[in-house]
Length: 270
Ligand SMILES: [Zn+2]
Image (cartoon, rainbow, N blue to C red):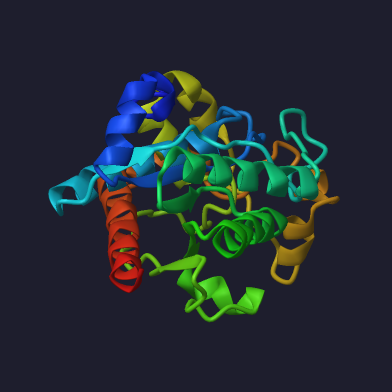
C-alpha cells in the first residue's frame, strides 16, 4: 500500500464529482512528519492515518455508507521530538489555517460531512485540529467532526457533545506483549509500518533497540519536549524490538471498528 492508494490524489476530478453526487462522506487523514526512532520512517503517523482511513472506508461501505479519502494532511507540531532531524515544526496558526482551508475547499466541492482521523498525539496539534474543525462548523456550516479519543476529552475541556467532535472509544483489547507502552516509535508503530510499508522500517535495527521507558513523574517532560534527547537519545519511547509479537491485524481491525462505530453514532445526530 502506498500513501496515495485509495485517495483523492489518484483520482480524476470527475471521480470527485461522482463522490459528491453520491453524497459520500469525506475521511481526512491527519498526521505529521516526525522522527520515529532510528528504525522507522518520518511518515509513520500519516501512513498510519491513511491505513486506518482505508479500513474505515471499507467498513463504512459494508454498512452502505459511501466515503472518499481526502489528501493526507501531514504538517504541524512536534513538541516532544522537536530538535531531532526530521521533525518539522509548523506554526500552530499556519497549520490551523491550512486545515481550515482544506475543509472549506471540500465544502466548496459540495461535500457536507468530513471526519478527521489523526495518528499524531501532540497536544498542540490536537488543539489546532479541533480549532479548525470548530471554525469550519461554525463559519461555513460544514459538518466537520474531529475524531478524538473519549478518554482524553476532559483534559481539553470537552464533553464529546460538541458538534465538531466525534468521540472514539478507547481500545479495550491488548495487542502488545511489551511491558513498555508504545509512547513513540515503540512496538506497535514499528509493527504497523512493518506490515503495510515494510520498505520504510529497518527491522534489523528495531530488533537491537533496548526498551526505553519514561521515569514516573517525567511524562510531561516528554510531552512538552526540550529534554527528549536526555530521555531517549535515539528518539523513541517503548520497546520496538517486540514489534513481531504485536497482534497487528487485531489492532488495525479494532482501531478501524472503533472509528466506524464513532462515525456511525455521530451520523445519527447529524
Ligand atoms: Zn507516531
